[in-house]
Image (cartoon, rainbow, N blue to C red; front, side, top):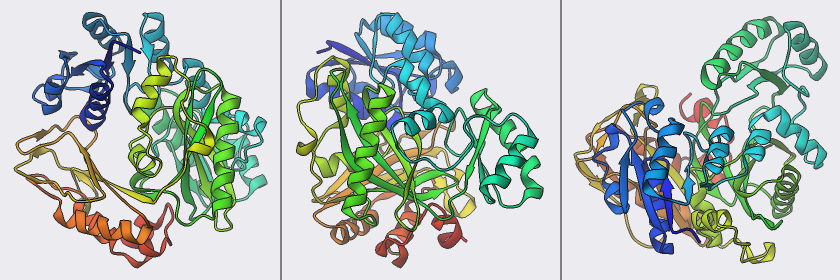
Amino acid sequence: MFERILVANRGEIALRVIRACKEMGVGVAAVYSRADRDAPYLNLADRAICIGKESSADSYLNRSRIIAAAEVADVQAIHPGYGFLSENPEFAEVCRSSGFEFIGPPHEAIRRMGLKTEAKKIAAAAKVACVPGSEGAISSNEEAAQFARAIGFPVLIKAAAGGGGKGMRVVREPSSLVQSLARAKAEADAAFKNPSVYLEKFIDQPRHVEVQILADSHGNIVHCWDRDCSLQRRHQKLVEEAPAASLPLKIRSRLGDAAVRLAKAAGYVNAGTCEFLVDAQNNFYFIEVNARIQVEHPVSEEVTGLDLIKEQIKIAAGLPLSFKQDDVQVRGHAIECRINSEDPDKDFRPSPGRITKLKVPGGRGVRWDSHIETGYVVPPYYDSLLGKLIVHAPTRPEALAVLRRALDELVIEGVQTTIPLHKRIARDSDFIAGRVDTTWVERVLLG
């Protein structure tokens, strides 16, 4: 096991990793930007090292400064959390070439799965169904038009080198294809420094279901069952739950098996997530792999009893998984709400500022993963996530009851938050009945 680990991230995921290290008896160093110099969680680390100015480019995205901090702190491994450099294959390679274990997949696997066109080839070889689409990046407007006619409109333009909705366009008519291609390429280039895009068939009103996997360096791979992440706005997730309540058990089992086959084919190691679209007939199609721990990992932890961060660390240290697939059972139902400092009534405009009051819910089945406290200043430079409210109960109806109660208890003042929106969602008849899809929030709730 490692003696010391560097946490190369900020906010709630930095605190989450620090806590896991403390419980494992592993020393931990944290990095921070000038904007985060007063962050309360830094006091829990054994050492905190400033790595630059407020902007991400000068701090959390600066590979050389993070490596320098790892050298100063004399750590053996670096945990990237999620976002920032967590899926950057060059950073993973630099970590290992500098003598630090990267707590994540091999850089080769990140590179293969990071390009969606390459990931689809691997999925096809593993006999995992993909959404019908182009085999590689589209090279011309003429090729795009020909392919779109072949599979039929509507089609979806997607960036080959990234996600999060960047470089993504739905094209319903041939007349708008060329203009949409140009805009998608420009957005992809700005976001990922890669303008490549590809086309695939657009599946209308699908559910977004993902499968958590764990793979060690000894060839053992298990899935930790599924999560439904259909409640989204502009491809950004708002609510996640495990298991996917709207799917029959046999479909969920097939999803898990497909995710394991895909991970084996990709030579995957450590934690990751295979994401799928599920249509109205419960046909599922692979869309991408997130080669990191995800924001929504707590719902999988709640229903399986696993600590995914600790498992990541053990795997990176070379230890084999201590359990088999049959040992990973789902118990009860868990739901997570992402609480962001945004104003839902003003197109989710970010709301930085000082938190003047914080009241955290408690009671059985309630978990609050957050780095904030009263007096904390939410900086304007980073993602607006304040915390994650997670509930767990024996059944989904009971979990929904706990969620409504916990949301009513949660108070954050001084900044605008998404709490009112989550209260609406938790009481909506469609959500309660499981009649939601990836377009539901904008099409029905906010439409």
